[in-house]
Length: 217
Length: 217
Image (tube, rainbow over all chains, first blue to last red):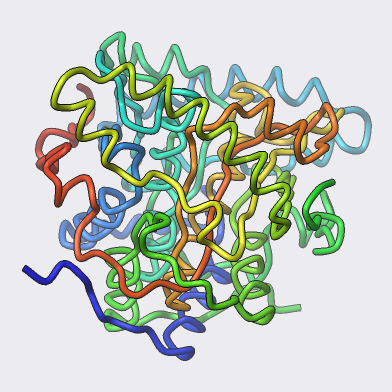
């Protein structure tokens, strides 16, 4: 049996991937439309996820698709609590700026997806010296989804200002599951040309030379 | 100033992204050629990385490009030590199978890249309730690199069977850096049609219905 795939991609095809990467944005509630996402598109996004790399081919990802308004309300409550605590960490003008930002789209996005890592009770190949690589596999799946959503002209945003233990209880997740991320997905009226926090000069873009080292630091 | 990007991708373009995702593989030492990677291609892979999403636009990633044979030897030593311990976790036929696998390509790949998370000493927007999202930003960058490498017909493999503290010392990384992953990159004679561990029936592919839940578990 021939096990090698001879497919070579062209520079033009690599450039298209780069264009998708460059145009992907974290989309928040002020940008979502309430147009429903077609089931076929949701499937394409989930198929991108499960074809991510995973340590020892463990595929440790699980997806809870949230559409229920009642559940979204509970998630929004933990966001509100955590966001109030978070705002207090910033001072003066930075805090006022923080409070002007819309940092989630739980209600505005027709689809929310909670993504969990599922721990297994046996040794996983490659997950023996750095136990966190199982979680990292799930993040690889998330980035695949984010790119696939963008290629389908669907916005996706990461809501990280939540209490993961509360989200676990709200979604009735068993003990051996760990929340990796909570996401909002929906169509949008457009993607910002640059990351919002760059446009607003909240943080500035780093130069490549600051981040790249040769052989050692 | 117009801040919205009106670029819509076609289903054909989304399908090409899916093809790249589907053809990406974890490439090991038995598949690398010693052909050097052009500087231009390395730049394209690193540009894909730094255009990943990052929490609070913190861009917490740093890249150590390793080509030195002496440093590779030290990395290989920690791999050998950790791999011997790892093999002992598997029993009987599974252990024999484990020992037949080539799980890294440190010497065979012309380029190794160690990727670190750089911690900052101030609050990061969005990294206040789930501190691990900074690390996850770095993993998003890694997945962008992996896809870009594949689109450029360059293989990339993740070496996770290493002692991260030893790697930190070998690469003279300052205290506030955390190793996220160590990678081997090089041209290859071809990409496997399926993940190697699936081909070898080490683990089987999960069905979508096992991994997807609606509203709650």
